[in-house]
Amino acid sequence: MTQPQAFQDIAENLSFLDDWEDRYRYLIELGQALPRLDDAERNAGNKVNGCMSQVWLVAEPEQVDGEAGLRFRGESDAMIVQGLVAVLLALYSDRTARDIAETDAIRLFDELGLREHLTTQRSNGLVAMVNRIRNEAKALA
Image (cartoon, rainbow, N blue to C red; front, top):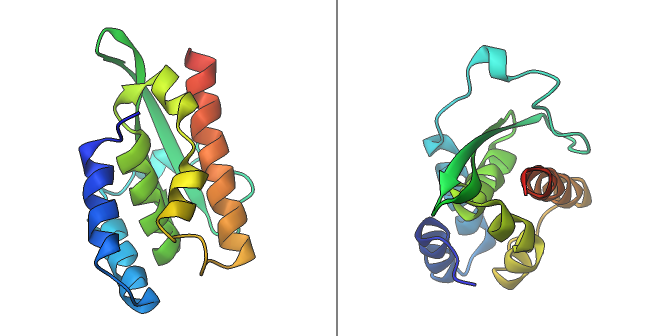
């Protein structure tokens, strides 16, 4: 399955960064570029459980290629996690529910070397975010 162009661009940029500190800086830049959620959207219903930092994900149903799909928006109060949110949004947003449910972000993050330097808590939080996104897609499908 072909990944969205936004995710492919991120993966390509990461491939040029050998140093983990450069990768951290890139993730932070990606996170800083995300639009902020409205205050009202930072609520218990949008909060992702299982994350050490605070993370909110908003799922908006939409039609994608004539099928039920989702657009995601998100935010975190931690800079690195905000960058991880940005990568997940690039991977999952504006796709069909079926494609979202079938896409294994954890495997892709491992292939990109994005999890190897994350703390256990951040890695667990990443898994919680992915599970939340995929569960939203499965519920819609």
